[in-house]
Length: 410
Image (tube, rainbow, N blue to C red; front, top):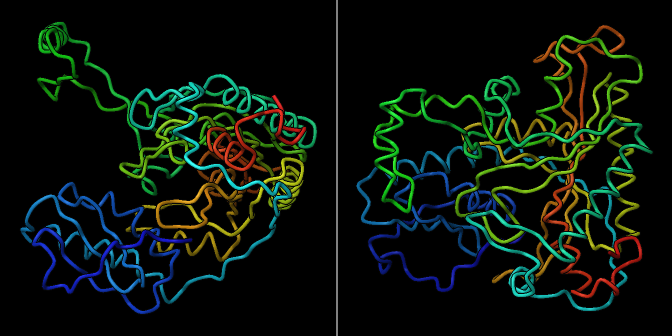
């Protein structure tokens, strides 16, 4: 994975006072450097961004103003957390590498062109509407994956809401592992005077104004960050049959990613199609492999240049070392990473358009779900991000659906 290049490297003494430099060890990889850049947006509001130099020898921390020492301290603690895994890196595995037969060059500026055609409409930060061929393509891929879930996996079909109880997410461990991505939902307290004060404060405003923080209640719900978190509470206290529980689900997903939000690559709100399974460990491992095999076949049929490779979730920096190491060492997560248009400094880049996950008995223990052998049930899932697949197909096959592979034509 490539990292952003620094346009010009100057001696540290000539750097402006709002840029500070932190050294990196010699063994920092490009993948870790990219993760440092991505996670750095959560370090401090006083930091614009942190960029790793081309040779991965240092981090340039761009501040919004002069440093009072607090920003440096936060940046150093953040780096220490991210670098803690250096001596325990797990070798990445590539399970599948599908090569594209289409010899045409990749399309450039795909997101901007989709907007020009009116097939993507920007509504807000990380919020888009699809129409025309983009919407038809998203629906087509969703239908293909739904059929796979029903026919090859024997799953029931569900459509989940955007809201999820905050208590359910806490029980799932999401809030302690990914607090930086959480989108909480609140409302006004049932109080006539408080609501009237709020109404008056906003009667002449074009932006939201909250005059009294105590008028807003503690968040009872959040915006759902992954469909599988909806599934486990529905099985609370149940003992499963030998055939386990399998479902194919669709819903709107929200993950806040600060300034990393860009185009269709990384949205605040997007659409996820999933196949989720719960049962004994052997059952879950077998279905995860079936999902990987099915996705590999999709890559061939859709003629998509992509790999399926080892991955880990974007845990918050203070817990990323232990949790990412566990995921990678146990092969708990693989990602399908198609090639997309090049970036400003990278001749070739990929995005995660699907993931294949095993969770062990974590959710079985959390929700008291038993497998048929009276043990805490294991679980797993495969998920496709539909808006990212829109970006991938238009990038690799162009803007005329008549030229797309037959399986994808709309």
